[in-house]
Image (cartoon, rainbow, N blue to C red):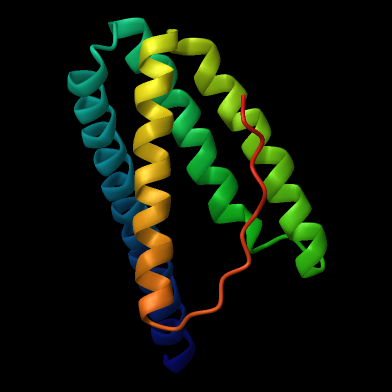
Length: 134
């Protein structure tokens, strides 16, 4: 009888943990959709640009989530991230026109500067990953 109860607990725990993961993924996806809607309003994205941007950003989040699972040294992980960011930026640039790209990069630079200011105020040491200017 005790084994049956343990098996039931195991099944319930497994189902619950999958449900939590699905809710987490749903939350991330909905937050990504909101981000794309805001960018669409700010940059006047077309529906095809919205769809492409959403797809690229989903891939980006999946990559970032999996980066910690890679069994690599910190330097290898840093290089992997730098290489991926080049591809990511190239993909985004290919779907945006020149005006939209300039607005996007200006927004990214402003966010990056604000983040650096925040971490410096907290005295956090940061090693930046070099990004290629496209």
